Length: 591
Image 1 (tube, rainbow, N blue to C red):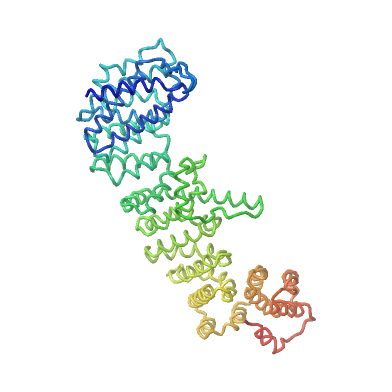
Image 2 (cartoon, one colour):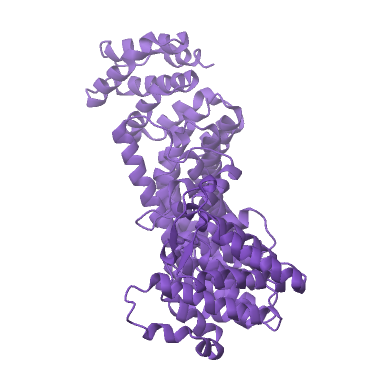
């Protein structure tokens, strides 16, 4: 004890000898070290650390002006007013003092004295009206003796800044799983204060939610878990986007509470559905902005998951935009979480809530976002009853068609394979509606059978076969099964002459496809159509000639020669009968 007393005197002298410019910084460093020791498993260590904190808070309390030592070598000396001392860890310090004040250890006495000294320092430095001493009565020695943990937090809270109140709550959340805190009712009481007045205490959503998720695995009692869950649900109501994104982050990191976190997410489908809708609108705005500014990187640039977590941890305030929508850099985490959540039955039961947002993301999202939405939809559809899955399948077909021409081969293949699955899901009255929808997929699938990526070409053939089965089109099915691919275009035209104009408009964009094989298939199919329409003067003929002209100089000789031949046929005088050699001429260009 004599040694400790001597060291305490030395500690006071050292603090008073700091240069004026370093008082706050040095006090901060010493108190941080002591707070770390209050987490030690040994009670004696916690007691000694709390006693040293008591010494330092008394220094702050006893001197309204701290005199720095006049030593030129150590810096400019001068008085330091208590109001000039800044302690960024004040909230953390106050939270720990309240916890130990109501513990059953020897630390309780030291924490009580330190708490009173800290109250004196706070009131001295922050009360603007010095004449108004009524406020000080709430934290006098006698008052502190009778205040509960909850009332103590309320008494101090009115003098704290926002970030300091946040630190008090973070300390309480951490203490839910702290074995050194003997009375678990104390941190629970502090959290009750926040639950009663969230606008004051729960302003830093990313920090508070992250702390809850980190503490959940270590909650020592069922009551502690329930308190943390109650706080998390309240934060979900106040900051839904932040909570869901951080839940996704925590679950994707594979911590031990992942099942419980998914269960929690499953219990708030309306919240997640709203977030998806907001996220889709954000993507739409980003897409339009990129279009207006010219070619740019996709809104969600690919990066490693680890880097995104680190970025999220470094900039917690960036989780939400000022409008409460997800920030672009957190999009991948949200969508990966959605894929995981889609494997649960709860999402399938609430698919109507999620579907509008997912549909919008399929329209305006990046290739990565679209792939994740497709994976989530696949997971959900396989859990639905046939009738419900059939109805949704009809709605999805039209959204898939633009994805067949994506620059990303993985997205092309995934969307085409999903079409095959959707065609197999329809039952009853939905079959008629699906037949109308699938007609628009025939031409894109025909051209994608020439895709340079073998897996995409194979998926296209399988999807076209599924379409032939749905349409009960025996000839088309026969040609596909026997791989007589060169006759498919003629088969399409033979059985759907009234759709020739539509086929032309669908085919023209493929004349600009990056792949020579696809351009060649488009020219060949257009050639078949133009031969049938050459006796008619249509507006499409001018469009076809205009579209074919650039291809006459195509770098691929098969494309250029067929484009020249097709143009010549279209411009030639009308004849009544088609020469027998036309189909063979077109067939010879098949790769």
